[in-house]
Image 1 (tube, rainbow, N blue to C red):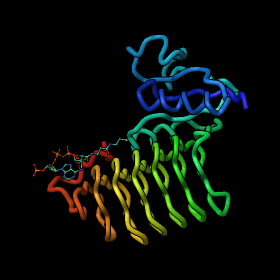
Image 2: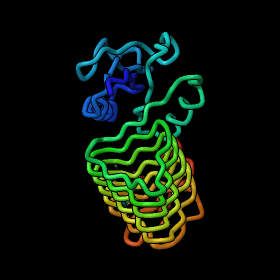
Image 3: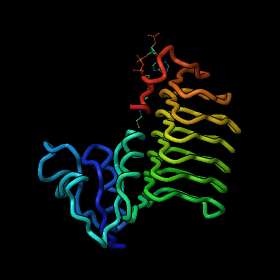
Length: 214
Ligand SMILES: CC(C)(COP(=O)(O)OP(=O)(O)OC[C@H]1O[C@@H](n2cnc3c(N)ncnc32)[C@H](O)[C@@H]1OP(=O)(O)O)[C@@H](O)C(=O)NCCC(=O)NCCS
């Protein structure tokens, strides 16, 4: 309650994170953003500077509000020795039976996370997503708006489950996968890349083009 929070990333996602911080009765100190043309305020809060130039506020916690998993990962590795804030919207239903949520993760409105699930660090579990029992969600994963993961699913590091996608029970998705909007995953995915459709198929693209590898 009333914890001071600095948000890294003054964009659309940052705006949502600021809203969650306020609804959690904590306090947004301001934003950091590496775009020098970002201006002096964003969404009603001051822009304090870039991640390189800012002076640490010892009592504050920090959260990275940037959609791109590679950028989140780089910043989390670069910015050491601070306390990460975990943003949980008050409407989220998170089981207290063997479920853990890693530091720096954002859990948005109306999310349901069921027992025995492990959510990694700096993940985004977006509005209305359902993560069923005994899932393992590795660091820097994004589960988009309304996506549904059945029981005992495993999602690899940096993977991005698109809006409204579904993943069947016991499926393992490796690291650096993008699952397209509305996609249905019924078999394990062992190779990084972009997959879409019902059931999902790999798109004919070079691996480097995968959106989560920018
Ligand atoms: C899958 C996705 C990443 C592909 O984007 P892309 O690499 O730019 O691909 P393109 O738009 O060039 O489409 C390539 C082909 O895949 C098809 N395709 C793209 N997305 C698809 C989807 N979600 N389901 C089925 N087919 C899809 C396209 O129709 C196209 O087919 P064609 O070659 O026969 O014309 C993107 O369409 C997508 O679904 N993004 C999800 C965004 C999202 O969930 N945001 C969440 C915010 S919370």
